[in-house]
Length: 550
Image (cartoon, rainbow, N blue to C red; front, side, top):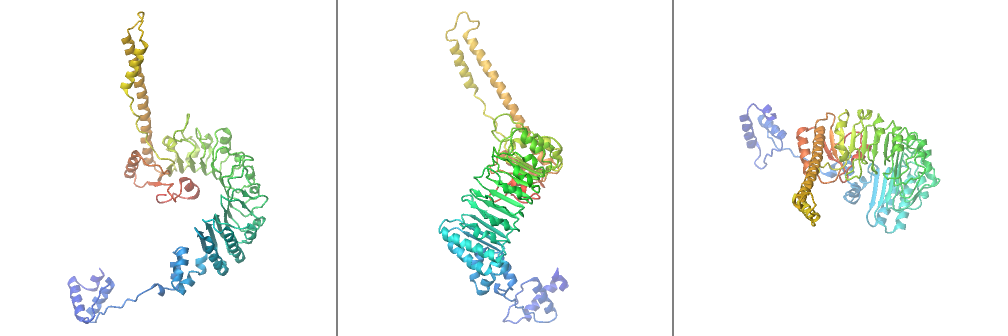
């Protein structure tokens, strides 16, 4: 189109190109690189000028300004930036250590950690004032004393600089007593400290970290003692496999909004220390049976709760008092029915329940969801297939349900094998012949007649059993079709999730293919993939339905 604007007809284009080639010097060939170059040559040839090709300047990485080079270096990993890019030239060496690229420094030593920490100490001695986030992780047990001294020196350098905001020291990273460096990190806002294989003892000076907002403390055991935690904490995660009670210091954290307890076996005192945490809105408890939930009903301000439910009126009554709940996750135990108080939670928007509908559960289970006002606000729901296949009758009354997830693989049970009629007849014949081996003359029926009657009785019982099996299979098949019909026709539903790593059956693949044809706008996701989130993590962390396959 642009060429036609420059000339009047295609024949004119050909004529001008020929004139261009004739006017060009013989020793230099005209190279038409782009459309714009062609238009330029045509225009110059039409004016009788010699269209010599313009020389395109060669642009190298070294010719780029420092700002662009630093943006390129920022896209590299820290290891590639320090071990490769910094060796190109002196300019790259200086730019790779610019303050902008040192905001986050990470050291992950798989083997021989001592040289890495000594190199880090050299870097921090000159540039610690620019480091905002520091991550230290070791995967080796060699030279623990020397490594611990180097780690302590690195953290002391960060404390002296007064700029570090985020610190993560985990796995097998050895360290000296925290008294020597932790109280000096007064600028710290986020702290992750400890490992599950070693004890962790906090210093009394930690209470002086007035800017600390988020902390994750791990130890076996986690020795808090009489240490006062910083009152500025809004998020706290305690990982301890040895404690049997909640730390009493929690009652002093009046600004705490999120609390996660992992591994704690608090079998005594219950949740009473949390009664003073009136700002707490998220509580994640260990999914372990036989944990004391005494005092849960007093936390009426909770909005998100993860716990192991208990069968009985005590838990049901406590759950009914949590009228502010918007997200609820129940797992780690086994329930014979959903808590009836679930229907009385008017603000509940997200529910994850792995305690009802387990495959192979013994005893009679009522897997039906309760009806009630909670359905009006329900938006996300994750259930096991045993409970999910019976849910469409209730979920049709959920006008805001947009995300439905199955916590195990939906499966249509295969038809049972038919019993062997010949085997039953032979067994009956043998039993009949054995019972009349001494045929008495006073019998009412001959031996052959009594044997035939036994065969007919066994055959009738077998037919009744087959009829019952056929009825059960028919009900299962009907529930299967009803579920997929609901998924394909419920208007607000926007996403179907499969939160399981089990192999998909042929029936499931057929159902998903039919669903993709019937409702193309519906998103089908598989969560629980390696490196991805589970539906429970999405429920607690995501504000909207994530895009992609999970």
